[in-house]
Length: 159
Image (tube, rainbow, N blue to C red; front, side, top):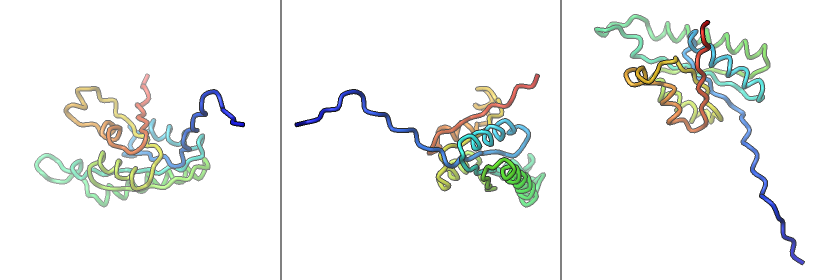
């Protein structure tokens, strides 16, 4: 006797999100993305890896002089990231961080690949199409090249 099953096959369950990567410059402009990352990590029981990339070109003034030293910028970012690690302890979210230097878009994608992120969360500075045309967009680069889904969080509206 042959048994035949009728009906639609069960869809595969969605993959479990275990590691979120928050790409941030640790500024006030990235607060909305940070809040979303912590909320999502807590809800999903996922770990949170914070990646902050220092663009060496952003440290130069016109004419080639530096307005900040890389070691000072790195120390400041590490201190801010360490505060987020402490916040994670308080909220029950495992948080770690990396501070890299290089092209932010490329480095975020590389970090997502190297760290096997299940999702990247990145803020948007709210620049329109004209801003992206002239300034480039880290979030757009990450969306196009990341090996996993990317959540772009716009800043909160100021009333």
